[in-house]
Length: 425
View (spheres, one colour):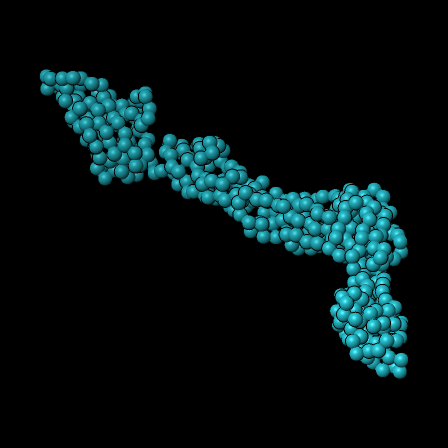
């Protein structure tokens, strides 16, 4: 019986070439192909010296087998070839099964932080090769985006394993911004935060002013007593302590002074018109309030008051900076006491001049009224507090009678008017 010359070769997984060597260094948990040159008329018998380390998965009896590598250690793989003539040949190879590397990555700082920061991630041991999930091949990386980070390492035996996972949580920074509404001296300026953030929440807004004042709040009122250039800095913080700030400069302006004059100095029920003239230059808009539900936006209006009394006339002006000022003058509209009394009447029931009483303007606006007629001996022959009542003189003789009217006018002033009337029947 002649001896066949058999050479065992093994195939590395994922490889396209076949290698022949005396000792094969492989990794636990994998399976590997072993092959000898194929003789179609031969039969092949494969044996593993230690079945605890490796087992033949498939292919025994052929020139090509697949072996499962189950435990760490060294075993001998033998193959016997029997050709068509009954001739036998043998070969063997030592196989060493290595444990997989156990890489561990760790962070050198917080793994939850704000955008713009990073944390160093590194492997606890030195290996032959590294491949991070972000495609870096270094032993360490700086993680600066939200992700689950891990690394695949390869040791000197060509064994690979994946490390533990570290989850990095990067929180967005807020974008600080604010507006200033109102830039006039002695008027509240409203500072309003318009800061934004794509996620999370802004939990703190702190304002720093040029005079050292520090104020908390999303918005606030701040009053400047002097015109000039000022600045404020706003710091905003999220619920994850991410911070942004913005510094803005702005100008506070003096107000234009509202001023007007009017003529005549007073008006009355008989002459109710008054002229108003704006004395303030360079205004943008104005508004007159005449205190009687009437308004005007004319620079020099003419207004007619309808009811006697006192009126607080306001002029409000707005300049190009939206600064506002107002001024008020009190206008008095006097009551003209106009009352007509005839000097005779004829109570004869002919339908003409049969009664006697006053005629005047705005008599219904009197606060009080008393009309009395006396005979020549001073005796009252008629009295009334109703302006619609008139003396009919029916029970009176011809002659001269005296009368008196006492009123309290619209302004609360008491007025008295007296006279005589002739009764002619």
